[in-house]
Image 1 (cartoon, one colour):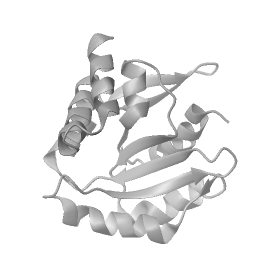
Image 2 (image 1 turned 30 degrees about the vertical axis):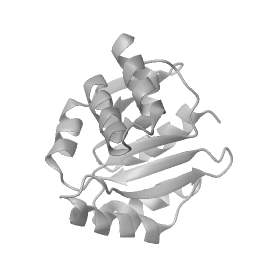
Image 3 (image 1 turned 90 degrees about the vertical axis):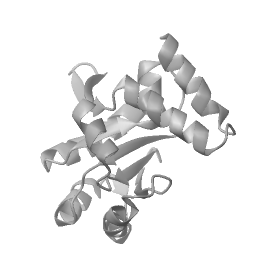
Image 4 (image 1 turned 30 degrees about the horizontal axis):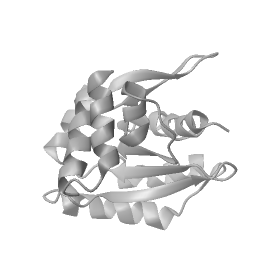
Length: 168
């Protein structure tokens, strides 16, 4: 199974529940810039506690996921509202490919709402055509610059990704 197939399993489940989300990280920077191999996909989702069980039930046949980890991340997210260095997340691991999805739970920061408002539908598969929402190119640049700054320049990959998106 290809990484985009794994991505679509998760985004289909989120969309079926009416959950707002957007794909970020290296998966998004590869879409807008230089393609690169990645071992995971990052998804920011506004997943409420009331839908955690339904979401888990929909993806459990295909993913290793702990409902307790997901519920913990959802409960933690609002407490991190004022701390952009910390994020609430849960790992979903595809059962056959072992491709990992890092599901980041929106904390309610204004910037997250802005990312959702600017998200862009991207075609990720053909025959049939499948689309999913990605952060905007401008947002992936800002996110990568922020990570680069927080790491005090130690994460050179972030800087390379920024340059790649800007020049493509």
